[in-house]
Length: 297
Length: 297
Image (cartoon, rainbow over the protein chains, first blue to last red):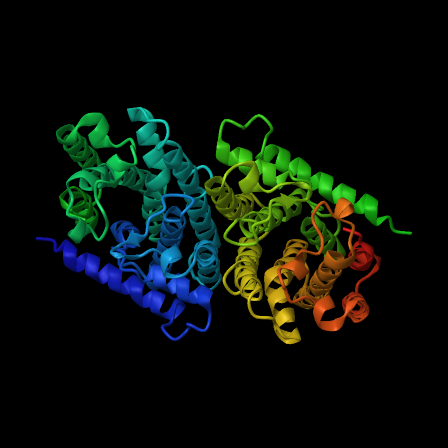
């Protein structure tokens, strides 16, 4: 029986070790670096890095240190997006993962700049790693293209715009799905694609893994909506019921809780189907997919 | 006699043509894209692109379309930094280049995201161009590294942090110079370096051009401080006297106007010296250096 928790712990530790050298404890002589370190070390589950490493492993052997570095860069992009989403001008959240958000712990200007800095540092990290790598520079250039396209105005950022707009005008089901595909799905797909590219995956393998990631990305979001209704604020480290308060369009609001759960289950089935042609190295990806619908936070 | 104005016009037109295809007029179906286009088309002088093209020309022949694309990507990074610097949580400026700033014309959330999107799109543009280029991928990877390092937490963003902090605690001369080197100097140096790299410059040529750019970058900032005291708000398209109102440490405040002018002049002399070993293709770079200290806006 595959032990997902041990696998996730290993991935998290590997990425956190990477961050210890990029964001050392004693580098607090810069308020900017302190804010970046604060948010990057705020106890994220490191789901995207784990997906990246697992994707590298399913097409190659073990994920090497360069894959871990790339996974860390993706987590920087994710963390930047959380910092900016939490800002007063956006979701205005004071708590994230049970701790004060960056603009509360520091100030708004510092939070905006810490987000900007994490985003920029992600690309600097990828380019710097590429320049010392034995992997082909074309592969690395694809990695940078994949991450930037997923994070950019045709990906995550457009998704956040639509999410904000959806607080005023309710979304239909297709628009809700599209919003999530952009806001969170794009970077999840990119995480898996980056791992597959750096692991040496074929075009066809990359295509299947992208399909897998698209399904689990949406399932993750459906479960997020469900947990916002049914979750335990203590376990989640954040308030629940907030979507309803803000009149956000969610899957439970559109489909009801039961049908939302069954929709998430269907998505996970499709994700698992996309892994059909891979060998037993796909265990972590399968377990990650199943974890999404059983998680409590 | 070299006609700088005609040269700058040609550069601006080349980069603006590039932007017309990236940000088409009729793409206003997305509020995000509209905000990005609004700020990118707000009438910037395109100094950084011109420096990039001129650097490519001084080491190579003419700047090809890929250099123009890269110059446009650098202008996207510059524009993002202006949008974020203008935000209420930062400089809280309502006017930029004589027009309402992005957060005034749109709203704060949209402005934050439009900035994020322009930064991200810059890297997507560089990676995408690299993947279709006949130039070596290593050169392009260096370009991405140079731009990200200049824009990131050891460059422009740290500079903006220090600029904000300096509103409360006055800076000494060395700290003022360091702040400017980070906040505006780094991206100006990167603009020239990117042009030199893509133009096929040698290590030594790149080193000299970086020195040139460091000097003109600082001179540009000294003149900005001077113009904030002596400039014509009508010509500049923005208010003057604002540094004094905000108690900002400036060169005129530390050195007086005359010594500030003479310091800027010395910097330009050093910049011109750094061009000594180049042939007459250095005319645009020389003229750009001289322009900095005679400009009225």
